[in-house]
Image 1: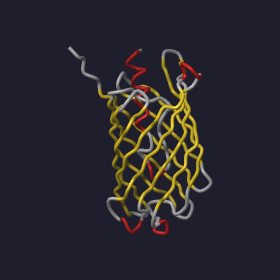
Image 2: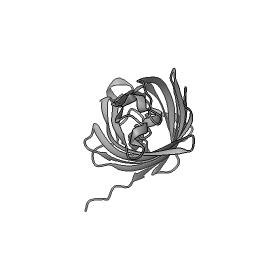
Image 3: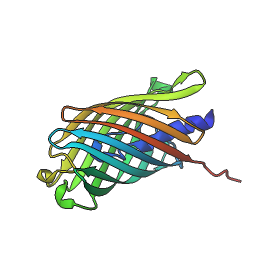
Length: 213
């Protein structure tokens, strides 16, 4: 049970690894100091005036303190047979914990920059989100539903947006994380905004900690 709870906590590193979609893909719980995790995900995005986009990404996360996690990610996004590569950094900060407040609440932030096709994207794409969650038990399985609100904002060269939005986007989000194994967690998230809608599927691997002797 302890290992399963750790895996669920490590889901924080899903945060914004899909920055172009505006998804947060994270629960409100941080992973804890010294924890490590890697994530792989695929997202389908529907954007007004652009059409459908496919987004694939990978991410590494690290628990900097008990309340602060940091991460680095790389991905590529495809629209109309054109593909752009991007990378970025971010963090997830715990604001409330369910032991004291009945639920977990975190503040997520990240920034990504284009690696290729820079003339078809904003200079920097930033995302901010508040995410609340609370684990629930169904039979012998612990799942973590989560919900929140996020903002996606392009900075610099907004009018170049093919791979990034030309205007700031807001969306509500709902998702669920479910453990598959002591170190593996699957997740699903849906985002709904006025101009952008997206769905994401992913898999997280919590790197086991080495026992100190």
